[in-house]
Length: 45
Image (cartoon, rainbow, N blue to C red; front, side, top):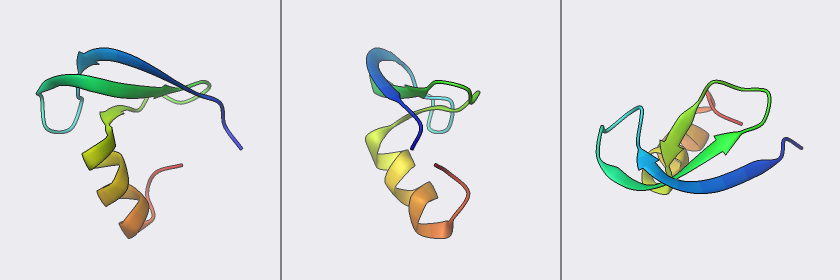
């Protein structure tokens, strides 16, 4: 499983400033809400 780090920043999906996850080895930076949606449709993680 990829290592996740949580930082305060700009979500790359909804473009709001909030706590986002940066996954080591991936370019995705997104907030928990967007990550949940992306997990549900299978394009994230």
